[in-house]
Image (cartoon, rainbow, N blue to C red):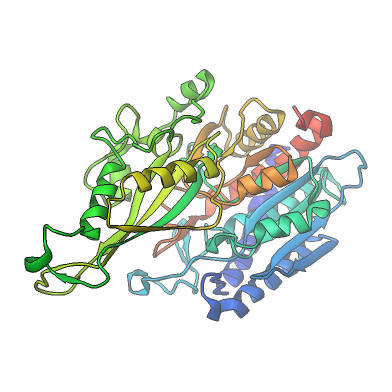
Length: 467
């Protein structure tokens, strides 16, 4: 079976490449209102690709923002489990355009890789699924998949999914499933098959300090009235101790520690700190003491300063006490941490560090994103492991923890179904950055893994996926 799937994917790899070339030319940037028509065109393109693959039900679901594509292919087996595949068809902005070596919307094959915006995140990963469906059918002799497949392909993920939770609630009956497959992540390396087992949550805060009602002469008023820029600097400095530990009271109270099995597997994950520094264009490592870099970017919560400012920013000097200052903060959360509880704790911390005479305003971006956890001892995860191992000729896959945040926790909470991650992006794909690329061999391996996964899920069955 493995060789049959591999041969089919190899024989049809040019089809995937041709489709990817066509789709990547559509600049569906959801964050830019002037690109709205292009995002709609991107949805229509993928909907047509699903129809060409054979999906009998394909719909474009409108939202108050950008459209989502829904495709369904019922299995002929009435007892087959139902699988929901989530991804997104919108892409990031391309700024700064001058740093691109090629046109971001003119796909360019450069040896083993293809460069274009969306090549890895997430169009390439969605198209390997369509090839995987065809390979699954061709190598099993079926006219419908061994599982009922539902694709939910969002159009606003790169804009923070502002309308996605409402869509989940509105369409919940149509989206009922036995397992969810997320295909918007990656692997550790080409020769190290892995699967994400957790994604961090996110809380965002804009903090504004207002002092005097106008800028003041620092020679006349300095040292006698509160300075909001100094107050913001003190608040920022107070966020961490000298060991990099977040100083917000209660911040770590609900953090779920790794199991012994997860910790043992983590020691097997190859990680080159020198290469990490090179990839990050940085000159030193930093972070919470007592944890490795791999742990800091995946399984530990963080507090980060994303922007800070206030007062005069021009050339030369302007000796003032500024009227206003600000800091933008983000908090990455791990399993069991709750965005509402972190917001409450951070709010209290900021109030405690607001000196008399300073007016503080805190603007929270939405309700925050909850973290997502995938236990590695479930039948769903074991089925994924077997499928990936078959595609990569491996004995095991290593668990990884995704440092980013997305709508996965909302899907998990709304649908109450087990979740696994099948993604083949690589750490150096430069997603969200200039010169995004995808390694073509990883897309072909992804198609193989997807073809095996539907058979594995069918063999586990509905009841098995619950355990």
